[in-house]
Image (cartoon, rainbow, N blue to C red; front, side, top):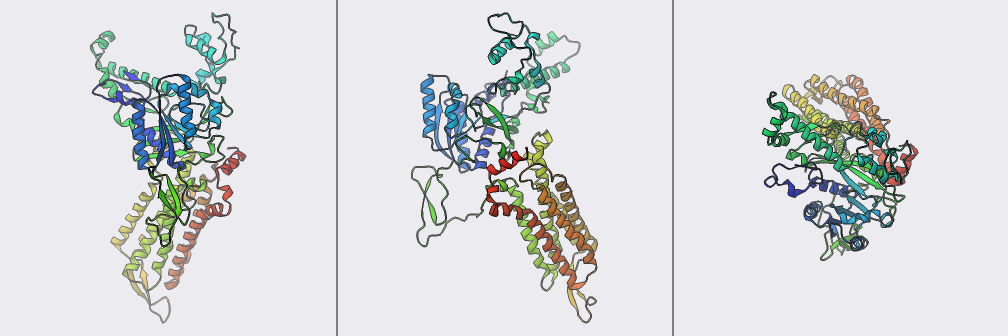
Length: 624
């Protein structure tokens, strides 16, 4: 048996159901996706609405456990009947819970059939001012989010739906019912004469917004994959049988041999997705994050605003385009959902008895009180410009640039064996980290624009964080070059009696000049690759596209070190050291200024540009 409905943990018991397969993946992954969405927007105070059944109970336990791990809190929990009950009692219970909730973000989970009528209460949910996150789509929740398993586009399906003519399928009564349900008319040639015929150009492409017939539903996609899974297994089974045996005999004598083949089946469907029944498939999942747009009431649009990738519980990534999000009309900007606001300077948190850790009271600090917890002071960390420019890589680059400035101090003072060894090695390694961080930033920009129509390779690169891996790879290559340098002919101190007449100068000899230029050449090649990629990506459309500043920063970097070579060769003694120190400081300052000064200008001088409202205004003015 193959099921195409939502994943049921009870049916996953192989001892009880050894030959039953579920096309849907485990809901444990969608929990991680929802948690990632909450953390992305800083929502720590959340209400949970789940179905009153085994699935809802299991989801509730797992979700609450994950929330505790991430420091999030549950405002309250309400269980809803999974089956249809009296309309008034169910709806009143549900809506009362919403009105009493102090949280602005609500999670809805389960096949809650009792809420079918609630889906038509569009006017109420339009003004209630709550953000809903769910798996099952309810079009009334304007501004909400839905997690849907990623479905590739099946070739030819949309064209078929646009051009299908029910008169070509007279024996299929489904089309007649569908045409009547959507267009309140009947296809030409129908036997029922009391209802008018549809116009000849009637097409499913022009169906109302709340009837999304052109988009493949989750269950339809699972059915499609289930049919092909059985077909592949049957094909493989009959290929393995004796070709002289008839198909009837084969199907009768080997009716039990389909199960092991189905268990091991693995294929790629026409949409480009890998299909299998292996247990690890529950960890390797991709979800489309959709924004529900139901204003005006009845519009019922589903807009893809992001994706959540998962390869394992520790290897996950989320991409969200905040410019495309439509919030509930009660909010003019990204809503907040916290139990207590952060305490300002001079205040301390006092936990509220009997309430979750997210709830506290801010009271004045008493005299001589000091904080008993060290906190990392980071301002504007959650603003759009900071989020849009990869905070992790920005931190790495800032630390590397700080070390670049500090390594120039090794060239000052009386040389000794230790400083001679550290001067060039530290210079080469630290600058490699800085330039490779710029390279990783550039690659991230390019991948971010490829994600609009991601292929399997792009998805794999995003999930695995391939761009960040360039930093350790580049660093290890430079480390190997430095190790060879130290092993063959390391730097040492020597007395220079020729640079200045009448003076003996203690200087550092580089040992192997060839090794020095290999280190410098490798650094230059990284800079050249970074400059080339950034230059090619400079015109990609985005409000905070880093490619332009990365291009200019690498241009400054390359200019400094290209100028360094002839000047360095034409000088000797103390002047040679001064030239190298100046080049280190100038290139470091160039990277720091070109990449981070524009951001600081917007954050500190023009904060009005660092908002989602301004982002949407500029994006629409550019026609994106």
